Length: 82
Image (tube, rainbow, N blue to C red; front, side):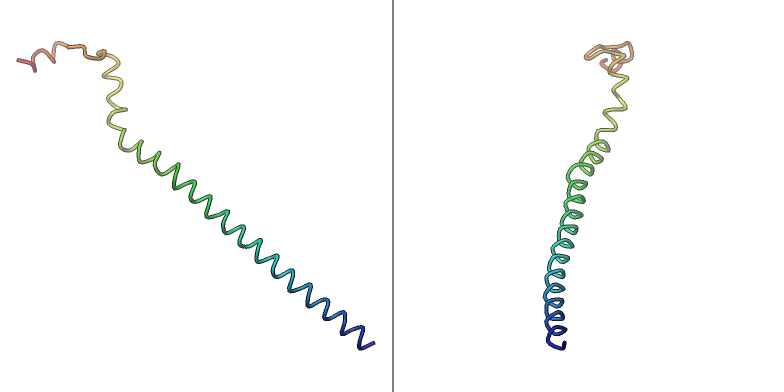
């Protein structure tokens, strides 16, 4: 009986070591996945926000350009040319 119990405990110990190795691999996979998610945010979202911030004055002046036409000279512009 002692030999059977010893054999079962050894098998259990080997199985636990294998399970620890598997859990370690799964944990590493989740850590890499989280790093990749933050990299996507850093490479796509952050430059988009920065570009919007830098282009905001141009976007605000777009209605003025559209109403005057590109290269159109208005009455107020003529006064500035003198």
